[in-house]
Image (cartoon, rainbow, N blue to C red; front, side, top):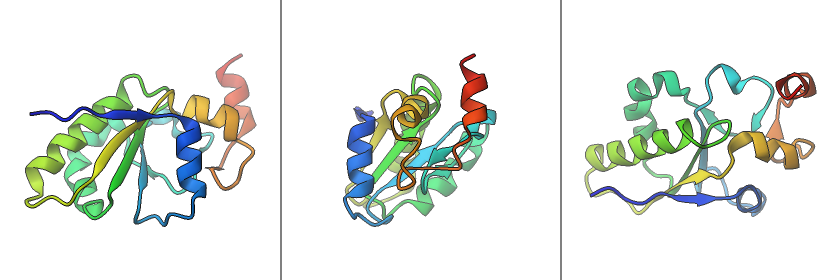
Length: 137
C-alpha cells in the first residue's frame, strides 16, 4: 500500500527551518539536475533526479533516523514528487522496524521559494541573481 505524500508550502518550510530544529529533525532533499545552479535551500542535500534511482538506497540509509524528509525540484511538479514516492517506497522496503517518519513535497519548488526568500541567508544559500534573471527573460 502506497502512502499519500503531503505538500508543505514555502512559509511552512521557512518556519521549520527557523524553529531551532536541528538537522536531525528534518532534511530537505533537492532533486534538481543541471538547474541546481543559482542557489539552493540552505543545508539541503542535492540528489539529482537523473541518478536518483541509483542513489536512493544510500539516501534512505543516510536519513533513516530523520523523522521528516522534504523533497523538491524547481517546480515540484514531476521530479520532486516522483523522488518522494520512490524514497518512501524504498524506505519501506529497506528498513525493518521503520521509525516513525513523514515524507513531504515542497509546493511550487525552489523557483517560488527563492522568489520570497532569496535574500534570507538563513533559508537560501549560493543564490545568483544572474541565473534567475536569465531564467525568466
